[in-house]
Image (cartoon, rainbow, N blue to C red; front, side):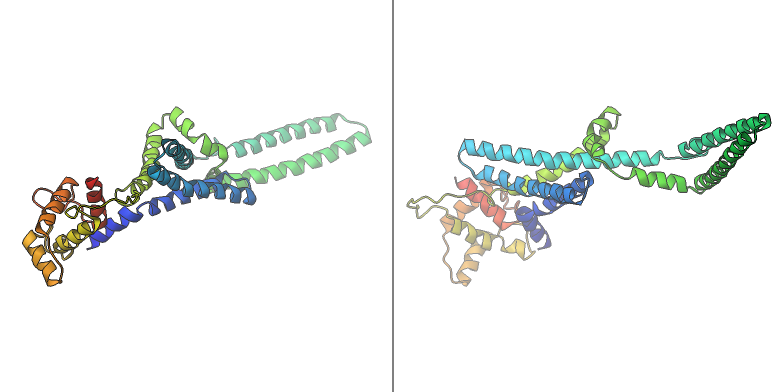
Length: 331
């Protein structure tokens, strides 16, 4: 019963979960692309519209009988599906590239750009102080001496400030805080990171990453359209005013056969359809009528639709799906 319920839910509503996953990926991607709150809201609305209407365009394309309108619907689906798939792959690849960047962050006193800059400024200040000391020694005018002393005081303060910055930066490098700060800055994702992630990954030899994420995102899109294209679920049946053959197999007859024939499977007693005599007794107990000739026709139809095999083993456990396949086989 649990397997039957699972099959029914996935066959009828299997597109909902991948649609939610796809929508969540698009929302996150759109927020990463946005430069502000208002822009983010607009981007998210566009993304949700694309994700929501793509399955509908595909489903209408299946049902449409006009080839022109069918082509338009499918072209509409391709455009919207391409957006969802491309943005999903790009965002996933961009995240992988960010992870690669973060793994390479290793800040030491020898390679730290900030510490190098502080030391360069400190060296320049020391050189200026030495130059001012020479000027002071060579100066004789009182006004010039005063200016030099003021400049020396300023340089001394600047040297003390940068000396403190060097000490603090050295401590941050030793404790690992500098590396953590650098990784935090790298985690911010830009629009270029997303839109250029696929060509960058492909160009730099990370093609397995692109293929991996492509298979996953495209697979999610295929799950949606496969669920929408299930036979007997979304296919429209146009009613025709025709006189039915009394001995013909009808939808009601198929439903009655499935109700009785699948009883053993639903009860967990057998994986085969019940034999004709058992079905006859079962229907008569319920006060119904039984047509042995029609039973043989329906059973043959079930084999033709591959609902059961030649030994009456049930191949399609979900009765709704089985009924759809059998009705398709009548046409």
